[in-house]
Image 1 (cartoon, rainbow, N blue to C red):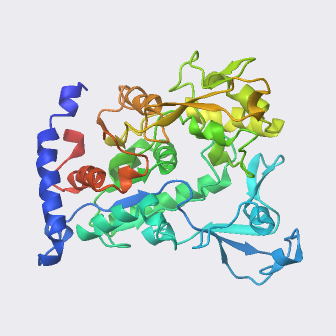
Image 2: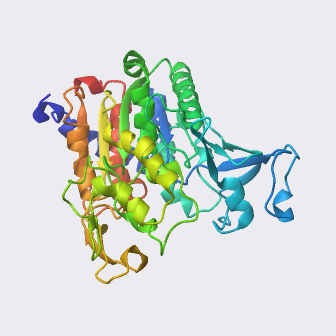
Length: 426
């Protein structure tokens, strides 16, 4: 479909956006709300990484590293593991032991430590990722939830949340991935229930950051007739098509995080967005482009198994990233200094502190990854309805928290949620 055809509804969207925000700003004085008047389509939100709250239950099989870590062992009760108002210290032995994942060679899949059971809190509700810390409200779509509620949406009725265990990540078809498979089943049931309880209207999926990868995996694993029946529109915010360089910096020996999860490896820069000859890390001995990621991971000190898991699980997913084949809008920031290259001018390799070269992006996701969406998603002839919106001088977080960005994002959602608008005719 030609771009002119894809954008022919833009003037109407501008009109609706400004009209909607007039209504939102005056919602307290109005005797009715938008969903009462027009029966808006239900919305399901998928938050970014670390936003979902995770509870743990310790069975009798749990072997604590110290007596202090056995406080909840065998009591049958769920307790909050991530995240409370006092964020857990990743170096604290109890938290680290109970939050870690173990790769089971026999099952070919990740699992919790023996004796540890986990679950995402309040699946189906946005309250499942609005953590106790008020600072998380901006990060975890809290301001978007408030704006949607001012527009007439109600949590558990027309507005739903799909928290997930962000330690995990999608894996290639045919690969064991019990946790993400379970999430897909639960999300499918949630979407069908949201539709059924709202007059059989299809839903609007809205994701932020890592939530976009989970949403794309969910959509691409769902039968196409089901997608077209139950999903009216997919709005993906602050997600690129090929990872981001900043993540490589966290894996360096001087800054390396204690725990590396599948979700960490899945967001590394991909050849889909970064050219084969584009150096992302430069030392006195060699440079590393996106295609050299296994060599970089090994040089950064990751164990051989972690490198192998990247090559067999994370990389194939990144290379096969494709469009959802439902109407889609990508909303991203830009114009914010973003880590683009790490340079090591002195001998010593990756062990020293690098010189950081900044480029364009949203402060997290590089512009190259954002622009690649137009090819990977919009350039696929099967994706008939695609739109990319880039908001100047807007950060990764700002897309779901800044007032100007929220106006643009909410305009997309409300326009897609209007019954009179058929996204497939845009």
